[in-house]
Image (tube, rainbow, N blue to C red):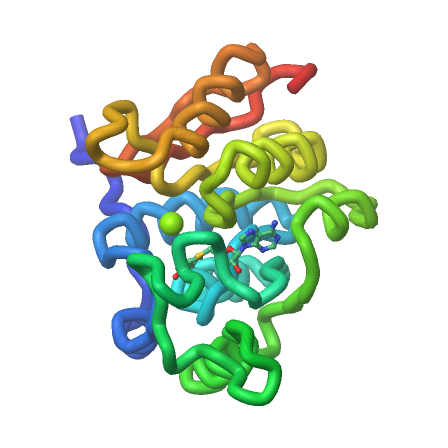
Length: 219
Ligand code: SAH
Ligand code: MG
């Protein structure tokens, strides 16, 4: 019996750009995301991310998209999630627009992609996830949900984007914590809901990153 194929890994310069980027995706979970994205890109359809922030995980989706000649699409209003606002745990004062007095991660995101040499592989959609999803028409090969962590936002991300997944497309959800002591429960609840729908089969788990394949109708 031959050994299982080693998972794909990004080129060293892409990995270095990812590690240098501001953001919230740990390296090990990022590599699991990358492996899922390389597989999904073979469907020949766009890879969609909800929750760009400064483009850290976007680099991985874009590099996977490049291997298959598809595009990565990333959606964010760039005003930050609840827990990233001033006074909250994940606030970064360097991503505030002083003129507007609100967060603006779009300039940093653009620098991140430029540094990684991946600008041509990404379409950035600046807006609220449910509103972008409502405008979206075609099928997608992968949906990566890493946006707002309230039930309202996570539910809207799932309801807005999961129906656009092609058969065999991948739904990847970050920050899935079964134990409330480890983190908020909204991503866990949409993960449970996806499995309960009967439309998905879990194909990989790496810590809080869960990968489900669309294997049935419904959602
Ligand atoms: N994937 C990023 C982290 C994303 S953080 C990384 O690898 O570092 C979550 C992001 O989701 C924030 O930038 C926030 O602005 C965005 N977000 C939260 N709710 C949103 C919504 N309803 N629509 C669009 N973007 C949203
Ligand atoms: Mg996350």
